[in-house]
Image (tube, rainbow, N blue to C red; front, side, top):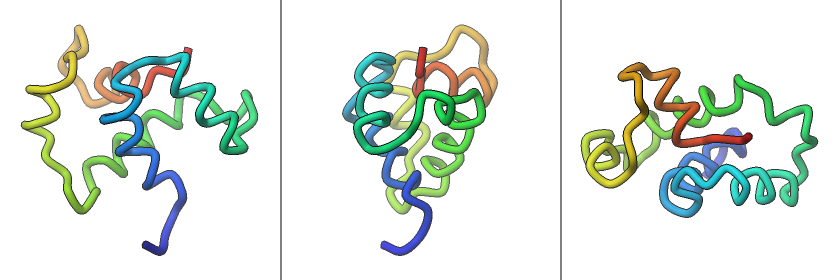
Length: 84
């Protein structure tokens, strides 16, 4: 598909890393991100792409993945796409 490359990392963050911060961080650095680019805004963008994803199903994800301690979208992004 044509678009932002981060669109592809939405699925990786949900289905491959499943909240494993070390794995996701290593994957993004191997892909070409610098450590400085792994900031607090990146998980929010990845959640946005996940919600906009062609196969988005938030209800199913909430059943499959561990929920954050606080029920907000920012907490969800930080929890599912942990980078630290």
